[in-house]
Length: 109
Image 1 (cartoon, rainbow, N blue to C red):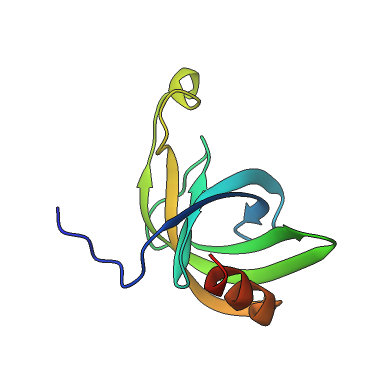
Image 2 (image 1 turned 120 degrees about the horizontal axis):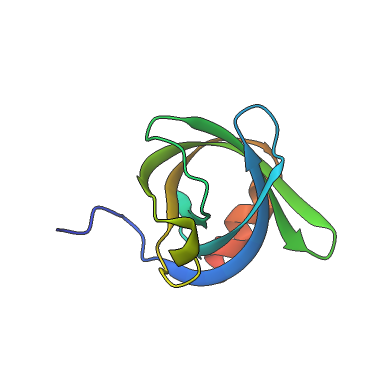
């Protein structure tokens, strides 16, 4: 399948919280671009779902944003740790806080 991303994915592990109404579920990002990222999680939501995300950037910095699920890969719970790509690919819709922090982080990768 041809690559559709405009940017090259950079592999990083960042802690986030996400949820439909409130960011309450804990997960990790394992790759990131300027337009979106992959949330590694055993709890996946269908494409088209909008999520609120709070990303911990370290040093007390946080980025808040709204994202939309583009694709999801569900795996049985016992295989979540064994399968690297269990989770959701999301696209950034809007930032609530920390847009400059996120953009700077991506530029430095």
